[in-house]
Length: 109
Image 1 (cartoon, one colour):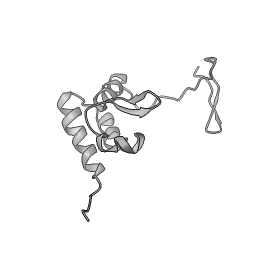
Image 2: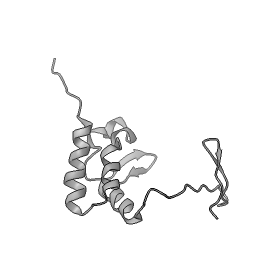
Image 3: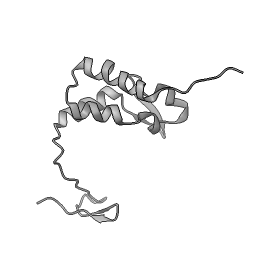
């Protein structure tokens, strides 16, 4: 019987950050750390897990995809978040004030 080793997801995430993101200009340390810490392989079907950290979008079923890691990083870096942002929820009618996780979210004033 041939032993099949499990992928080292931490190593794959680190390589993704170094080889796909940093080399292409992603410099925001919080974005890089978030990408280093997010277990992308848990957000894709088992059949796609071996491709989780490749430089490509992946099918996640129901005619939907998870975006290419680089595109996610570009969008996050472009937002220039500082960590002081507040959550704001909207209901289906676009009105703020919906409950999230049992907590009523009030619109920002």
